[in-house]
Length: 198
Length: 198
DNA sequence: CAAAACTTTGAACGGTATTCAAAGTGACCG
DNA sequence: CGGTCACTTTGAATACCGTTCAAAGTTTTG
Image 1: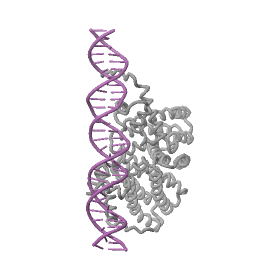
Image 2: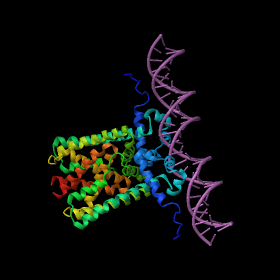
Image 3: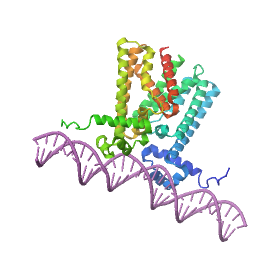
Image 4: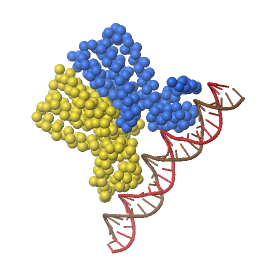
């Protein structure tokens, strides 16, 4: 309960760090985002960043979380509209997957996901964080399925299946498939759902 | 055409290194497989390993390739039997995915896949190697679909979709889902194919 | 049996994340 | 005000990593 003096100089700056990290991942790749180079770009020191984020992995995880929150905000209006109108059909799902999938080879959010997956098997905390973010996507997708495609049974299962597929496609997009694979993934989603709705 | 003296002392030893690497990944995790620790376990020096494999990533990639070849050999008989009998149906597909999916949280083959994915976006050679291994699975799966489930149209597309889903599930298995998720993934595959065969 | 080619070693190098003692800075209170 | 105290910020020190490479050892070859 020790109310700290609530981080005098930070708050906005913290977000500034996350934004810059994401930027740098997109521009130069994850490996080039060292504590030293990132600190230089922010006009501070590596030690300072560690003082606030504890560890490099912690910083990267928080950056991914922050990015995910932005995406959650992005899909919220879509979701509300669909639930209100109880319509949308396959198109609603397609606009959802459009937000889910990696954009291209340089999508920093997905580059961070790959890094998280590679490390999660050795770090329970990372695994838990991953799980939590997955669950958010899952909850929203189930909601969307209920509202937009009520004729599809087994919403929980279909969500698990679709997200696994989308993860697989996003890997492909980021590791060379690019926008070509992205467009194919959208079509695949349409086909997979068509199979379910008969 | 310079016939080298065909690696005097290697050939068997090379495979020994790959096997030990895979073993060590399973037992201690990828991060603990350093050139020094691996060399110590093999009774040699780090410099020696790099003399033969060029780089740590090269060694890991070759280890994955070697592991993949063993799996290719494992699914070959299944495939031949199905093509000869022109039967098998869904069960044939299920025995295929059973080979594809990660076994559990410690499956070294899949831990190497995660590492490869994380690095491929920054290394064209790794991306190409990944692509090549993917293509082998794809070719075999298309063959299997043709023989075991000839009523399914769009075999190329279905293969792409299924493998993306299986990749997604394998990530989940390795990052904490374990055998529980693995069993669910098998059931998901059955359901997905059922949707296609009507 | 040289000499050439190939192996093997381990010390050195440049780079990394992380730690931490010391210095700096702003807020709070007597 | 002024001084104390908590919080910030720095950058040098640390430990560890993959990689390089000169030197020494070993095997093959002519």
